[in-house]
Image (cartoon, rainbow, N blue to C red; front, top):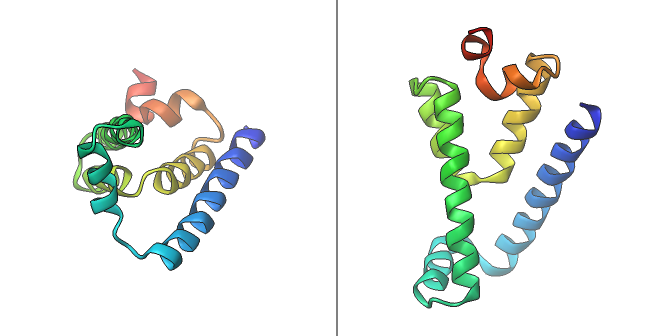
Length: 114
């Protein structure tokens, strides 16, 4: 579990630092570039479309795990819009709260107990 937590921390840190540098260099016009690449129907757009599918699944899982409560829906939207930084932070917190019990991390306490 410590190796997993370290991986989460590395992914979080690298993406946040990289994002700061990109935003400083290119501004915050992410959505125009992201959807523009998809509209061009090339490999960058294919990657973005695939990545968007992963973001949707990540956000849906966070909302589902929290039984689609208002807080769970906020997490889901955060996962959709903010991606890996939110997911890695959420998984890190869950790993602490569940003492590394992966079943409880992935399903939540109610579903894991059933």
